[in-house]
Amino acid sequence: MLARMAPVSPPAAFAGGDTIYAQEDAADFIYEVIEGMVRTARLGMDGRRIVHGFFVAGDIFGLEPNGAHSCSAETVCAARIASCERSQIERRAMADRAVATEFWSWLLKSAEQAGAHMCLLARATAVEKIAHFLLEMAERMSANRRFALPMSRYDIADYLGLSSETVSRAFTALRDRQLIATEGRSVTILKLEGLRRLDGLAA
Amino acid sequence: MLARMAPVSPPAAFAGGDTIYAQEDAADFIYEVIEGMVRTARLGMDGRRIVHGFFVAGDIFGLEPNGAHSCSAETVCAARIASCERSQIERRAMADRAVATEFWSWLLKSAEQAGAHMCLLARATAVEKIAHFLLEMAERMSANRRFALPMSRYDIADYLGLSSETVSRAFTALRDRQLIATEGRSVTILKLEGLRRLDGLAA
DNA sequence: CGCTCGATTGATAGTGATCAATCCGAGTGG
DNA sequence: CCACTCGGATTGATCACTATCAATCGAGCG
Image (cartoon, rainbow over the protein chains, first blue to last red):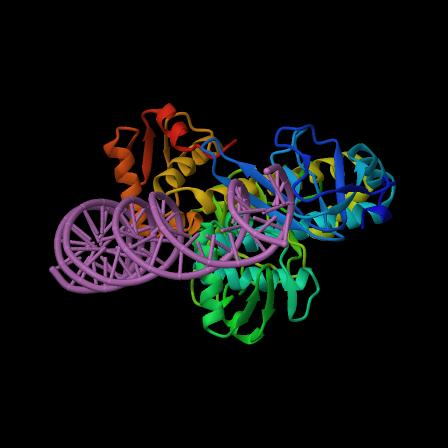
C-alpha cells in the first residue's frame, strides 16, 4: 500500500491497452494499481516480447534501479492507477523507519517471486506453466474457483515463454483432463489438487 | 562491499563443492564472496535443479525475504566467504543513510539482473544463451579475452535451463563458427562482436 | 590399474514453434 | 438490421530445436 508510505496522487483512470510508461522513459514515478490490471513488458531487438509481470489491485510497479525504465507498462484492461514521485518515497524511507522496513521487505519479496518465475521458465513444460499460472492468478485475484482472466493468450504466452498456440493447447489439455472448465477468458478450477500436482516446482 | 556496511566476520575458507547453507536453513546471515565462486540453487520436488546465480569476488548473497533460505548455496571451487549477521545489517541500514542507500540500490540492481535472466530463459535459443552467458562471465570475472570457467557443464545447464549435452553442443557450435576457442574449461573469446550479435536480448 | 565423473559426440524421440485454416464475438458502416 | 471486418482463440499439420539415451574418451584419484 503506497499510501502508507508517501503522499500519492489521486488515481488516474486508464482504458485497456493504454501505455503508462514506455521502455527507456525516465523512471521518476512509482505506481500502485487501485483497480484493474497492468502488465510490464520488454521488447528485444528482434521483436520478441517478454511480459515481466502482471499487477493487480494493491501491487506496486515502476521501481527500477537506473534512471530509465527497462520495461514498458500498459494496462491490460481498464484500470485506475495511483502514482507517487520516486524522490518522495526515497525521502520518506530515509526519514521513517517503518516506511523503510516496508519497502525493503517488499523489494525482497519481489526478488523472491522473480526467482520462482525463473524456475518455471527454465524447467517447466507448457502444461505445468499454465497450471502454475492459473494457481498464481487465482490466488492474486483472490478468487476461489471461478475468475476471469483479463489478459489475452498472447500476454500469457509472452509471460511464460510460450507461443499463443501452445497456451491454447495447454488450456484444452487441462480441460480434457477435467481439471478446469473454460468459457471465453473465464476459468473455473475443478480440481485444485490436480493443478497443484502439476505445479511441482516449489520445493 | 559488505565491510562498508556492517562488521563482517573474518573470511572462512571453503573447498570446492562445500555447502554454505542448505535449502530451508534459517537465513540469519548475509555473505560476501572474497575469493572463488559460489552458486545458489534450488531443487524441485522431482529432482530438477535450477541454479539461480553465480557469485564472484565482491558479490553478496544469502539475503532472502522469509526466515528460511529458498535456495542452497555451495562453493563452485575453493573460496573464501565473509559473513555478517542479518540483524546487524538491518540495524546499520536504519541508522546510517549511506548504508541504506547502498543496500537499496544493490537490491534494485539484482532485481534488474533477475529480469534480464528471465528474458534469456524465456526466449533465447541454446546458442544465444551460451553466448550471453560467456559475455556475462567475461564481464563479471573482469577478463578481457581468456578466462577459466570454474563451474561444470551441469551447472551451466541448470543455470540456463538446458541439458548438459546441449551446453556442450552450443560450445562446439560457437567454436565451429570461430567465435570462441576452448581448452577444457577455459574459454578464449575470438570475436566479441559475433557473440554480442547473438546476445540480441537487451533492448 | 581400475574407478568414477565430466565432457563430447551420435542417434533418436518428444515438445513446442511455426505456418495455415477456421471460428467466433465485437465493433463498424451500409 | 445485417453484411463486413478485424482481432483473438482454437485446432491441425509440419518442422526445428532440444532432451534423452547411449557410447566413447580423458583426467583425476584411490
